[in-house]
Length: 245
Ligand SMILES: Nc1ncnc2c1ncn2[C@@H]1O[C@H](COP(=O)(O)OP(=O)(O)OP(=O)(O)O)[C@@H](O)[C@H]1O
Image (cartoon, rainbow, N blue to C red):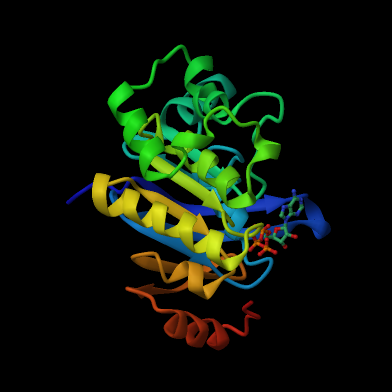
């Protein structure tokens, strides 16, 4: 059987201690298939961001284990985690997190530059062309629309060909048209180059771009939807008592 691209085993995360402790994740077992697009959904406070942060090595587990492919993250020291994130994980956040003083192209290449890696020119050309950024490379972020800025962030995540791209509400700051474009690009990266994408979202329409939805409620896995549609997501979320937007 294929080893999942990312996996949590009996993952529990507590914030704080004693009476005031919050159990953000409660013995979560979940795997994310290689070359698939998975959305994580659930009511506010259900643990979506905590799960993503633990899977991406941005937060540590209280108990349980987290794997990226065959590598166990739990137990790695900060330096090893920093290298693993740099070399094997791509991030796309709601806030585009571009540096304002450098161009779109420099932003795209920055993580690889910092790692001393040169992008494959053909791959870079393909990413830039597909993301419709060819004539925007010399622009600074403030000269770009929100959708274009997020496409630069997607290019930055795709260029090093990471094992997994983790996207946290990637369309949260975009209008529906720009959001649909970004989702279609993530979708295409999965279908056409086998990229693995794991995305946290509140939006049933965004989740419908995924191959599978993992539902969280109260820090536990509450269900899954294969081949989701906006309607099937809304219906299942209603069952969890969640507000959808
Ligand atoms: N740093 C923290 N310190 C204390 N409690 C936290 C911390 N981060 C998250 N929590 C708590 O853990 C629980 C899960 O939070 P998390 O942000 O993972 O949920 P979420 O599903 O992503 O929520 P939302 O959809 O509102 O972003 C919540 O009860 C939250 O208040």
